[in-house]
Length: 126
Length: 93
Image (cartoon, rainbow over all chains, first blue to last red):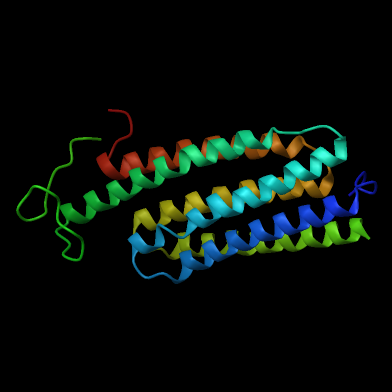
């Protein structure tokens, strides 16, 4: 906090609110990771941190550095776009891998594959 | 007054993110199967990226932004490679 002494009060308020909101979202997502029962439920929990948490902290960072340097600092949108694009890709691929593993082990508490009789299907599309 | 408010709220945010990272680490150690551990690794690198952004705001330098960007890119690639490995048993076919 060396050069933040000339930050106006409204910018400090907005930054504090956004950063605390984002950190709270992330913590709620982590608690969900701890408490939910099955793997397919647990997969939803960290996306709270990747959407709400990242959005709050990145917006707070944009407001903070823009008012501190008196010019628009928009480099954080790069991280925002990147996280928004990559998180669904990784989690969908991971869910398909987990479903493939469960089906190849003959687990019964997962839905059967579409178009087959008894669920066990070799997925050739990835 | 604004500096005090900002430094305290950034410190609290760092503590919350640290607790989130600790929970993700705990689940990664305890998680019953491999896919649980990979999901927790994914959550852990997103939390570490946010932690570095808040650290950069505390010190007032934009230097930590590059570190956060590198963490997000490498974390995406590593999670993708691990999911691919889980699916096929090999990464590059």
